[in-house]
Length: 93
Image (tube, rainbow, N blue to C red):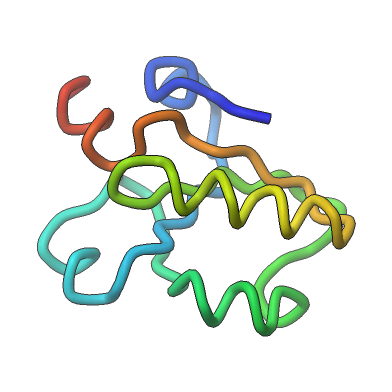
């Protein structure tokens, strides 16, 4: 499942997760997103995610987040990939 940045921005209070490294996140990120490194999220999803919530994941270009979303969906988590990732968000600003 995927969502465009423009559609994501229309949602009320979405759970947005930036899966890039902390350094990239600290440089800039989507508003109201929280940073959880992709490897940490893949190893310990139960620590961060609730299977009753929807999470919108993004990385730099949308490729890594797409793969991670599929892995997490296979484990029963409701994840949505943000198409184009952080770079798509920059173009929408």
